Length: 176
Image 1 (cartoon, one colour):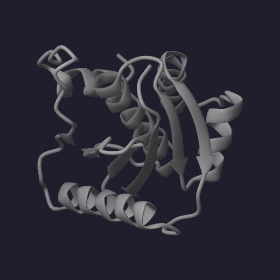
Image 2 (cartoon, one colour):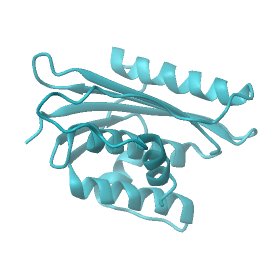
Image 3 (cartoon, helix red, strand yellow):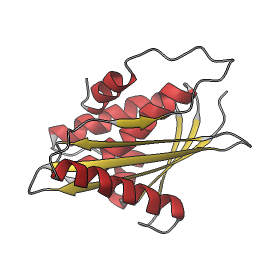
Image 4 (cartoon, one colour):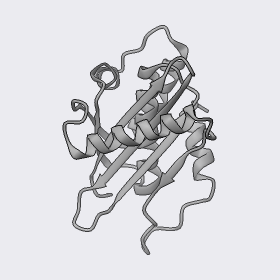
């Protein structure tokens, strides 16, 4: 079984330009366990969808770096999103439901607890808020909409991860 991990997520959106920025910070809960982070600029104009996509990105990075069965405590500053994720609620929006289904698939492979944490109440939440805003600003200024992922290198006991991590991340984010 993998070491437990605490993950913080956030998203920022510019609905007028139809772009958003996502950010993830994960802290492995063992001495010397390490951390991982990811940020991503996306063509998304809805803050709820962007928050769900940040959660999906976080869980995908955990699955790829730490493996199935990892115990995850995930903090999100959007209380409505946390309720959707805890209760499995769906609504009439196909894009949001597709993203929620993607999170549900990942939740089935990991041991996830979703928790609400108010915006910028901890250094970790301030960090992901800042990185999400940076990713949004990047997209606003015409930067390419491409992921930036930093994951820990596999230890000697783990086989190397296959190439194409970013392609698989994008496939999961878009529900493919």
